[in-house]
Structures are given as structure tokens and as C-alpha cells.
Image (cartoon, rainbow, N blue to C red; front, side, top):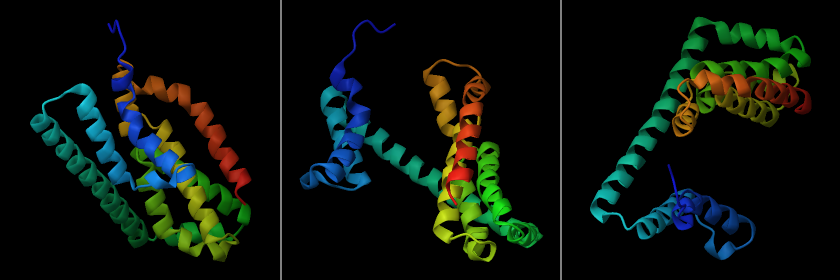
Length: 204
């Protein structure tokens, strides 16, 4: 049980976010990229925790490598998934259905990536696969590419948030000592479904 909170240590995960927000909105002098902000945050964390620099640097670069590898893995998997859907002819059938009505396109463009996000646990993979395979054809069923692409990205993120197998759900459950991520999904299901319906209705 934590008896006393160290404020400086508690703020460490927020340092990169604060730098990015402050630099982009209010203080252009400190504006920087995500990688630079993360490096500043790591240096701040090292200073306030007084950790062993050698061990800290090993863990830092190992984390960077793992994150980079996982992102590339998601992109590659999504590309392969989209290629498989195209090869099977399912994408062509889906596009023909969407061409029948702007209303169908609206719901297909939101619910499709949403369900994919729930099933795969990755909003990026769902949006990437959908936008690569379907979004370029948006004008043929009465929508613009930016609108459909944004809708797919938002819906995929909402599906990922609801998914019990997403990385973030597993991490949050671990931090909160919840043994079963399904318990988190039960509490998020209704808000996420309402949100994806709102996205479908609002983005026309």
C-alpha cells in the first residue's frame, strides 16, 4: 500500500504530453516532435528517480525497440489482412453494397472498422486495413475520402477501446488489479456503441 505519493515521480509519465501540448498551443519555443519529447521525459524520469543510468538506458532502448516492432507488426498485419480480403473478392462485394446507398456507406464505414477493432484489439490495424481497401472508392458511393477515412479511424479507435484483447485494456486491468478484461469491456460497451453511432450520424 502506498503511504506517500512522490509528486515529481507521479508527473513523469505526463512530461512528454505536457511538452507536446504546451509547445503546440502556447509556447512555440519548446515545440518538438514526439521522439524528442519522449527523450526529455526519460531524462526527467532518470533525474527524479535517481535510477542506475546503465540499467535505465538499457530498459529505455529496449522499450523503444519493442514499441517500434509492435507498430510495424500491426501495419504489416493490417496490410496482409487487407490484401487477403481483396484477393477473396469480399472487398469488391462490400464496395458494391456501399454504392447502393449513402446511408449504407455511412453505417458500413463506421460499424465495419468498429467491429474489426473489437475483434483484433487494434484500432490502427482496423482503420489501416479499411482505409487501404475501401476508402479510396468513397466518391463512388457518395462520400469524400477524408470523411470516410476519418470515420473509419474514429470507429476503429472506439472498437479498440471496447476490445478486451487490446493492449491498453490488458495494461489498465493489470494496473487496476482487475483479473478479467471482460469486466472492463462490460463497462465500456454501451458508451462505445453510442459513440460509434454518433460518429456515423455526425460525419456525413
